[in-house]
Length: 229
Image 1 (spheres, rainbow, N blue to C red):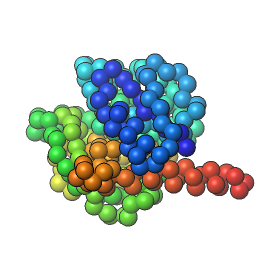
Image 2 (cartoon, one colour):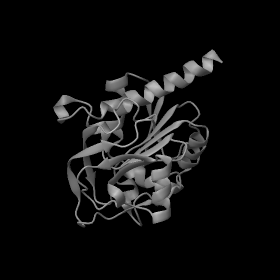
Image 3 (cartoon, rainbow, N blue to C red):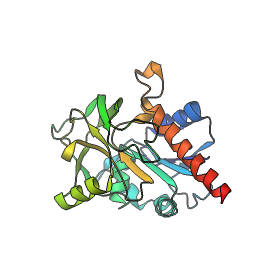
Image 4 (cartoon, rainbow, N blue to C red):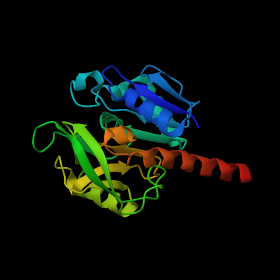
């Protein structure tokens, strides 16, 4: 399995994502610049956190027009896995690959601390190694992590099982305590907390490891099934 870690001007969690894949999975991983026009060699695309384009205009609003995002949309349509973390989540919502939007934290302050998440749906490629209802410790670091959607969209998210994670104690005012959502197909996930910063005991928690093992196990299962056919 091969991973791509996208890099935009202002990305600052790209190295964290790269190292997480390298240390947890030992799988091939490349940095891919925002001007890239071909993601066909990759099975999973990671859209990392940071402050792409300085978060000018609105978080993710400029990165959404980068050439590579056309390829991310194509990869998502093909059923490849796409994981957007923090600013990556914001970019995916701006690009229309995920529903909703991210607004300023209710406190109007930057939040940086460990949070407890509840795994709401463990039937996605990103969560299959967790138990349903499992509580995990994953750090946050954001100023605009307040997830918002209208009531109709929220009902759809609930009905379709698209809410992957909820906060146990909401740190930013997100509607329905939402910390992460998927698209309807389940192959695109966006989340504000940082699983790539929770893969080593030295970081204080290893609860993010299962995110990465889930991805590779889901991919292997897909390819084993394809080979049987």
